[in-house]
Amino acid sequence: MNRITTQIKVGARASFSIVHISDTHMTRADGRDDARKLELANARAVHFPKAESFLLDAAACARDIGAPLVHTGDLIDFVSFANLDFARQFCSQHDCFMAAGNHEFSLYVGEAFEDEAYRNQSLERVQGAFTNDIRFSSRLIGGVNFVAIDNSYYRIEREQLDRLRLEVKRGWPIVLAMHTPLHCERLYSYMMTEKKRPCAYLMATPEPLMADYPEYRLLQQQADSTTLEAVEIITSEPLIKVLLTGHLHADLESMLTPSLPQLVTGTRTVRIVQFT
Image (cartoon, rainbow, N blue to C red; front, side, top):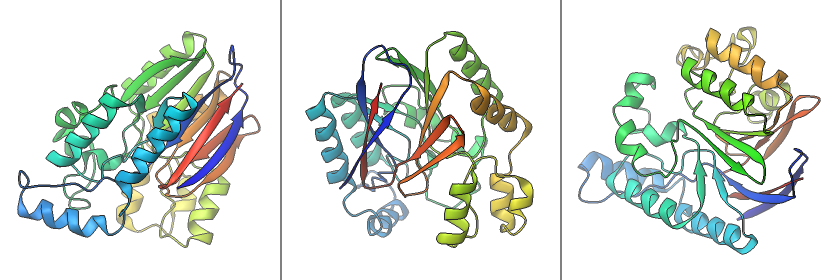
C-alpha cells in the first residue's frame, strides 16, 4: 500500500483530514451468479489480487487518524451478488463517502457500450449497496462541502449540473469528488505520451486532441454541451477548491487553473488529504 500526504488550503473552520482512495476493483462472485460471471471474476482477479486487503487497510488507516474515507469510484469491478454484499457491508461498517465509477454499473466488463440505458440496468440494485447517493451527494465535513458527482461516463448531466449550482449557492468551500479527471495538459501528456495509451480517458478533452482516438473511444469521450458548461463552472467558481479523482490507476497531481488543483489517486494508494 502506497501512502501519500497532501495539504490543501480550502478555508476550513479548523484543520481536518480525509482519506482518499479509488479504483479498488473488488472481483468477488459466487454460486448466485452465472458461469460467465464466475469466469469473469477469476480473470479479473489476476489484475486486482489484493483489492480486499487494500480496502481494509485503507479503512484501518482512516480509523487510526479519525478521518472519513472518500472513494472516487470502481470500488467493485463488476456487478455481482458477492461484490455488492461486500460493498454493502463495508460501507455500513466504515464512514465512506462514495462517487460512482464506471465499473459500479459494469455487468460483464466491456461487453456493451456504456451509456444511461446500460447504467440503468443495474443502478437501483447497485445504489442499494451504498450509504450515499453515488450519482450525486453532498456532505459537510469540517465546514467544507464535499460534493460527489458521477461523471464516470465522461459526462455531467443537466440535473447534476443544476444540483451543483445549488450546492454553490450554499456558500461553503467545495471539494469535488468524481471518478474521471478533467482534461488538462499534464494528465493528457501522461496518458498519451508517457503511458502511450490510445486515448487519455479524461473528461472534456478538446476534440482536436482526440483526432487519433479509436472511433469507439472518441464516441465514448466526446463532451456534450452540458459537460462543457459544467467544466466552465468548475474551473471558474472560486468556492470550488480541489477535485479528488481516480480512473487512471496512477498517483498524479495537476492544476486545472492557477488556483484549482486536481488530485488523482491510484489503485493501491491511500492519500491522506489535510485540509486547512
